[in-house]
Length: 129
Image 1: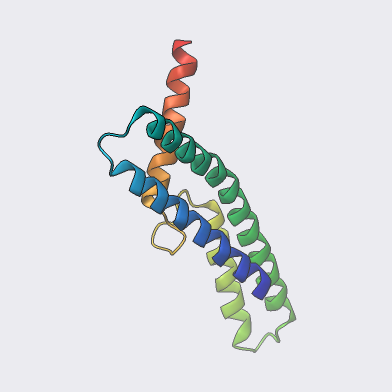
Image 2: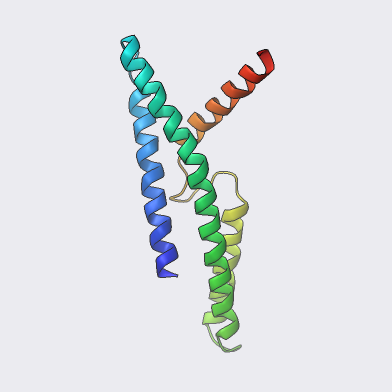
């Protein structure tokens, strides 16, 4: 569990960094063409990597749910640990199924917005081309 929790924190930190990069780039109104191209490349890289990182976060949460369920099974039936472990497993399962991890430290609304805009842009290009 500790390794999964640590991995989740690292992934979250990376996602937060991507969110900060995208937010900082968007604050510039005008960039010289060469810098704009570099900024777009950086945003595209953040968006692409975010999609992979989100899959990694979900897989980590799934592993955590399995581990906590196993801990609940090992706990004595009359133990206080069993209901707590079962509740944690439910919570991790809920996070895996959620769209944006809303209300948790895993929610990165500006990054989510950038990913959504990038996906919409790709869909428009496919539709027109």
